[in-house]
Structure formats: C-alpha cells, structure tokens
Image (tube, protein in one colour):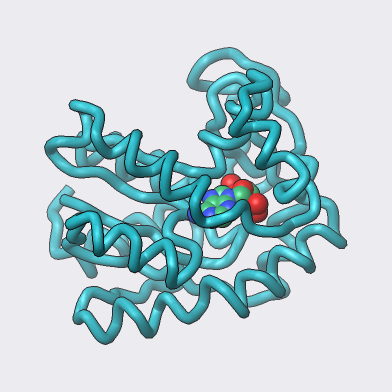
Length: 211
Ligand code: AMP
C-alpha cells in the first residue's frame, strides 16, 4: 500500500500516520519529522530548513524532493509506505510522478478551521522521536513524557497562533490544490477528522482495508 495523507495542519495526519503504520506494517515518511530531526542534529539540510519552518513557510521543493527520494529508496519502503505532509505543492507531486512513484490512494482528512486552532494549542511532540500527542484528545500515559521512547514532550515552535495562521494561508494557496490534482487521477478519498479512533476507522473504510 502506497498512501498519501493530505490535510490542513492539525487535521491529524501525524497521529493517523503513526496508527496506520502499526496497523498496516509499513513505514511512515513524515517530512516534518525528518526536517525537525535535521534541525536538532544541525545538519546542512536542517540549517537550510529552519528559517522557513519557524516562519510557517514551506521549505523549498528541491530540498523536500531530495529528502523524499533518498528515504523512499531505502529497503523498508519496498513493501509500501505512508507519506505524511508530502507532497505539499503541485511541483512536489509532479516530481514524485516524474520519478515513477505511483500511489494506491490519497486520503484527505477534512477539518474546520475553528477545530484546527483549538487543537494546535494542545499539540505536543516528542523531541526525541517525533511522536505526536494532544493534551486533550491524545494524552500521553505520563504527562510530558513520550509513551513510545520516554522522550520529553514539547510544544512546536511553529504552533504559535500567528505561525499557525500563516501555515493555514500557505496550506490554502499551495497544498489544497493537490486534492483536485489527485481527484483527476481517480485517487482521492475524503474522510472527516473526528476522534483518532473515528478517523482511523473512516480511513480504513475508504481504503477497503479490514483491520
Ligand atoms: P509538518 O510537521 O508536516 O506540519 O511540517 C512542519 C513544517 O515543515 C511545515 O510548516 C514546513 O515548513 C516544513 N515542511 C514539511 N513538509 C514539507 C513539504 N512537503 N514541503 C515543504 N515544506 C515542508
């Protein structure tokens, strides 16, 4: 299964990618997590990406295309994968298509803007492994500590209200057109974002997968 998760920031792509990755036994490729790890490690890619991320802007397409092609070439991706947060522009989608990468389905997770703003305030991520939580909807077992690796949970620097507003503006202008792009190719499936369990159920339903 080669799957793309589309949706606005805060729609629950990261949470669903983590759940589906365990249920379907395929890796998740999250460009946001890869970039945050690169920033933490101080790599040249991380240094290039940091100012864009902090401003709520998209990292240039050529940087993203490089990261994704390198990651998809690794052995664990041979049996399928879930893309979380990529492609985010038509140029990225076209680059994937040109390199011969085909997808089985593109699932768009729909959510209202009010709900996004509400959720972003409660979002926490593990600074060590990137797992995502929400203090209300997806709390960790021990407050402030990652269930998966014991790392410290932090609020993302780009989850402040004004950066979220900029990310939403960029989402509407750059990423939303991808729904039409994949609809034209007959790949688009749409689900409503609910509780994590409801959203997973809806995604598995549109994919026709029993789990
Ligand atoms: P995310 O964790 O998916 O919300 O991504 C966090 C930030 O990383 C975004 O606001 C962008 O600055 C950058 N980013 C992640 N994925 C991409 C992408 N596919 N294209 C451009 N920028 C990206």
